[in-house]
Length: 430
Image (cartoon, rainbow, N blue to C red; front, side):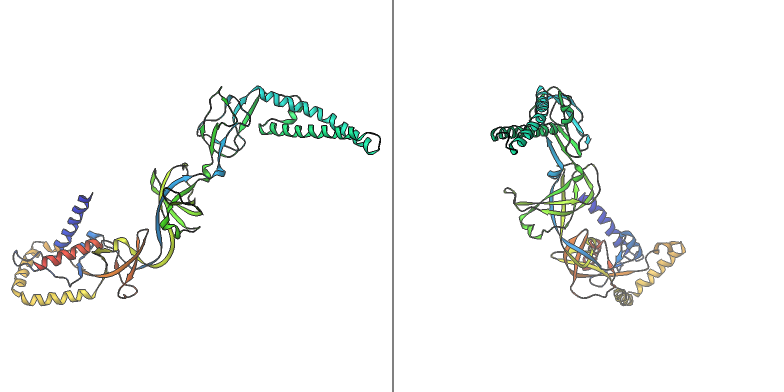
């Protein structure tokens, strides 16, 4: 790649150099047009070859950028590890890996004799509870009328409350395994129970097979709601002081590097990881995108403090050593160039006469077209500037000397202008 860029660069500089010379002067008597110091003179052909663009300084909001990486995560409130309330044998699996499920949707059917025992116990307590309640009320009335004994009243009350508590407990257990207490009271006993999804989401993992026994501690399904996915970034200790909620972050996903997403920081961790000395920050993804999966690797840059300042595109700036430069349109340099040419012409009248004769011959043979594009000379002066923040292809510019408000600046190809100017200076030294 470096070789290709170098070849392209040599080609462009060669075009600029050849076009800047007077091709009508005989070999050995050639006098190149020398630009004023620190100035590049370009004709229309040369500017077209570089696709040169002019513009003015732009005021933009630049931010301090912190590079970061991390992965996509689903918050704990949007994930579920599902275990059976009561152990049993897998009779039927209703979903497949990757299926989208809704809250309350049936996932698996389990069967076991213990389910029958649970329902029988509930039915027995439910039927006996009515008798115990009536006996309690009767003993209460007798006791209050000083007819019955206090001991019998207390016994009836205790038995009723015990049965009522057991009834409510068994009723809750039936509801937890999605069995209807009312149907059980009516004698409808089932040997199976269903496990349903507690959230909307996608089935990420299935850890069971038909016929296997699962215990109450076994995780049989993992479900995650990817609609709640967010970006989890790692920020190192040196940059933590720049963080605050509401900041913007631009990032890409590893399998989609061409698509840049944006996010907004909504939570900042309060504890460093011991090994990396990094802090977790969490950002809401602002773009509506699909096919994002928890665990995907992401990399991006966080925008911290904003600064409204004078900027130029990065291609408008060239560095030489520790200094930075830009090129501005300088019409006055064209006048200086014209005066230099007049002085040179006074010393070379003989050469000029010979050149006129050669040009006359060229015009007679239709060579006038060779000078198309050689007119419309423009001069560009290199000036030193001080650069600051960089963000999104733009760089902050501080002027050492003030410039008029509407100064025209070369917005691209500054590197090639510098190279051409250095080449011309080297040639004149020899």
